[in-house]
Length: 97
Image (cartoon, rainbow, N blue to C red; front, side):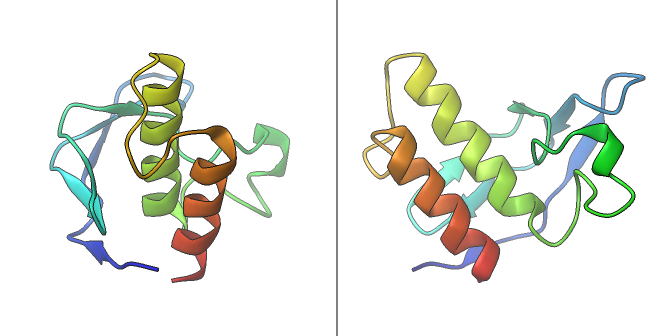
């Protein structure tokens, strides 16, 4: 589908390791997450982090997905992520690439 532009630059904000702030914009094709966006990484239960951590090679895809879902929840979806199914597809393709 697309490729990511740039590294994932985040700052940890909470003691529970669940809230992070994007420090530089992150782009995937025509989707750009602005700096300052808050994310929790991949939504993986903490009990599984030893096997599948919330942050890994799929982290950039998780941030893009969080952003698309945030826009959907605010009733202003991104043109390339109009609903949950499409946002999930973007996550899937982002994880593969």
